[in-house]
Length: 143
Image (cartoon, rainbow, N blue to C red; front, top):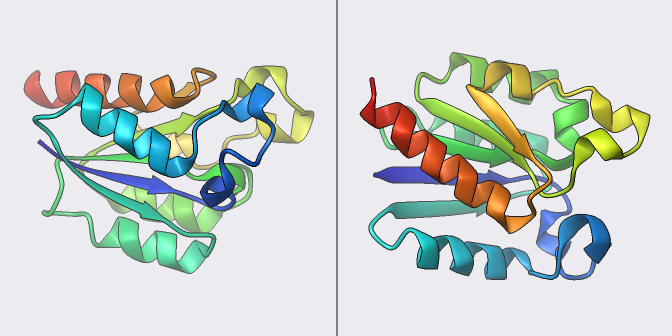
């Protein structure tokens, strides 16, 4: 199974950000934990603070990957362009968030990008990614 994992703005600063919300691991630590939990899967990891580069990566996923896991960071609440790119993509798509958005600020309650995904997972720190991978695998194998 080939999975593209896209991480958006400020996720390159994990480990320096509020550990209560985002956990202790750096982005590299999260990537390592994913590889350890799912050693038989092929992963491509991509992170950018640039909206256009994230869109380019989403657009290049068709035919190359079986699933897309995306943590759009703050773009989840503001990017119609990323949402539109996700909507066009015809593979399994799951949005993840490290923190529990339901318990956060009001502006984090509006998820523009999640509506273009098959579902979203929030609040389980690095395990949000694990859950998304597990569910993507189940969805693909039950088609």
